[in-house]
Length: 350
Image (cartoon, rainbow, N blue to C red; front, side, top):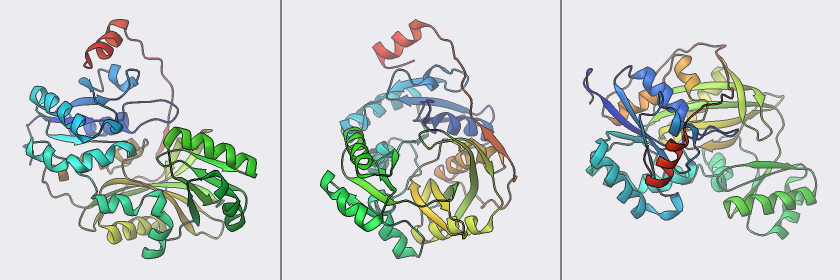
């Protein structure tokens, strides 16, 4: 448990802020608001051009870490080096692809004095895109039908079973709507080249896009859930603007998910609400979304609450939040010096 005057040192990944931004910068903003003048942020980056590296009012110091494909041993060795210099108390990973390594390392990190608050491997696998339809059947949740495929020839049966248009999804990220077999084939090759196999082909559901940011305590209790309707969507399907909603149906859906899975940590439910009002779960992302700062602005600071639970505090579930809070993302040209780029590129630290 953290004393009121004690400095909290937190490592955060996901510092990219491109047109499909990582959640890192938003998580950090929420932490700084939740622990005013008491938090030191250590950024963990994969690429040298992640903007968060150079935002010194956001990130106090950054270290490069190995790509997830390098495995847990390489990552653990790097974190041991960082821990010896920074004395981390908490780490918050924010990318789907890196979560397996961090979940696997959680006991070793705890031994090093680094807390985390992550789902179990079983929880993580249950909501995976590959298992989502069966997950929905098991817990009585509305989920689009899908097929998991490994070969382009399987697209014929997908079209027969699901009809056009189809939604072709990558293993970790990206989704492409295909109206013809040719479009589906192009999507298959593009996504498999980028993310590997399998490819998920999902029934197309039309309606209103809604996302729910959710925080579970790992015991079946929902600490926070805030639904947001997308107001502006990029060509990659990402929310560039959104507004908080008042909707008990969506809140209860989040609570049902957390109660059924005993979800531990942050997650995002991607919902498509059809004309008849049915909320279909399109995806369950196992970490905070990039728009997570909106939860803090609306009165339920999910990253700060997660940090408190990770450090052993008991957090009372939130009940109220401000409806009608809008976030609008924007681009800002941040100016830095080539010396900083050379420092992070050459030494892996800034």
